[in-house]
Image 1 (cartoon, rainbow, N blue to C red):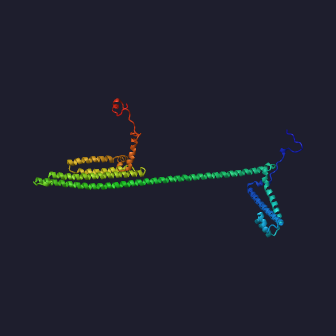
Image 2 (image 1 turned 180 degrees about the vertical axis):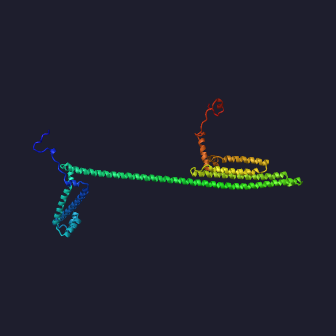
Image 3 (image 1 turned 120 degrees about the vertical axis):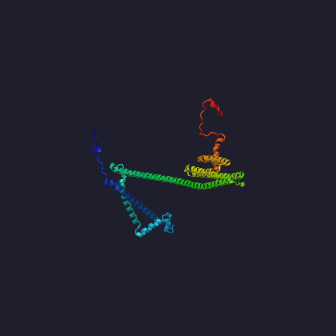
Length: 417
């Protein structure tokens, strides 16, 4: 058992704790705390004003004492106030006292009473605050202040968290706006590309329509020429029949001798050959110009143009050539005309082989004849194989397999086997 302490006093653990004063408890309540702080600030402001008033009264008394001691050294009271540097304050305070019709002593006593009462009020207002630093106060009173401090910290922490949350939400919203703006920009770019592709496609379609119209006009012209050729052939046949009939009847036509007819026929065939060669040259020029236009259109529209345009041009040229061949088929079959037909067919087969090439091959092999840029491009490609240190074998070339026996190996140039 615990021994009882001497002196007859109750043990310290049996002492009753002092109850919390109601004024102290109400001071730390959230509803009254802001009002108490406002009243405390108001009291401090009044105390500062009273202190300033007492300092001004002290300056006035010092100026009066200086006036009594050294009246002969200063010509006016303003010189005395200038000596202390507070002439404006002293003059205004003296003017206010004279307007109130009170004496300086009475004003000083009133200021002291106001200061004492304000100090007492301030002491009462600061009493709940002094409990925190006072070690003799009870733990209940301290706990009230501690709880309030914890609430204040919690309030500040919640305020910081809300501020951080608002900042995060604002950043999230700004990121969403940036994403929307980026999506709008990508959509605008895609729309611009699609519009450019549509414009290029329409241009290609217009070019195809123009080429088709030209082909139709050329076909009509060839048909009309073919009709004229047929009429001429029929007239020549009718004339020859009439001449034969007249010859059988005994008529003689010296101007239609065989040599004369051969010269006339040779002149006509030479004129026809020149016309056919001119037509072939113009058709080849048109085909080359059309292929160059298609190549430029394909480069500008990001490879939108398809291979239908060159095929349509080749088919058009083929139609032209077929019409010319039909015209030539109605001419009289002589040895000289057959020889020229063979030459023409050779030229046409060579032209057809060129026209049937893909656009890339035509650009590579025949584009240098019309475009200086294509010539430079092809020349630079070949320079990679003829420059010092280069190889004439392309990098993508697949090396052949070694020969199967010595007989095949003996036919290789520079054989290593």
